[in-house]
Length: 246
Image 1 (cartoon, one colour):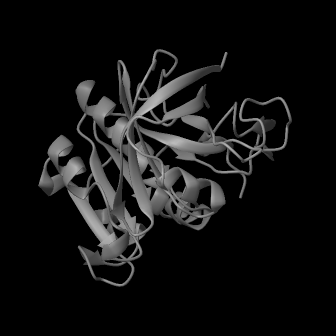
Image 2: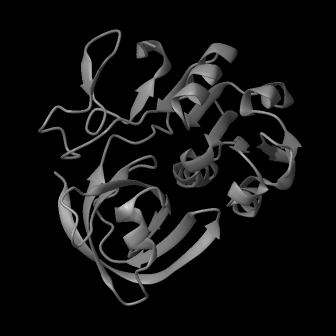
């Protein structure tokens, strides 16, 4: 069951264009898998804000978020020592036990953060992931060096749509650079669909829907799969390739 926990802000810094990294201290025992998310309560705002988990360990949590409205703008102004009320841990998360020994991890834009914890766990389990990170421009890119530190620079491709950093192109333009037997993806719906159409391997895809409660009670984020309706906040956000309907 999700629980509310109070976290203390250790740092809250801008790391890219309208993108912030916030490090928190608190009880992380409820987090069980990479790809899960938290719902953040902000003073003066009615609905909580869902934010994917970038990294976690006992007693500490890292979130990366983009300022896209009043709530996240308010969050970006919060200082070290302030408190945040988080509902955690939500969603099913990625299953790192599936797939072979050489998975391909694909993250686009604000879909990159949860792929860091995923890649970290894959490495810890003895797998050898390769990583493709896609952004619009150099100003939007973040965590590239962190991924290289996990898997090695030769197994990370940075691409940007305008060519201002890394290689010019979209994530699907570089799929043939690696031999892989499974895919993990997170990004905008158009990117996910493009990856789905471009690869033949099994994989897991992280989806977004507008969420109200975050734990499956309101049914507002239900989507149709090949087998049944699923609530993205509770039964997802990770869906298996063989159940996705576009």
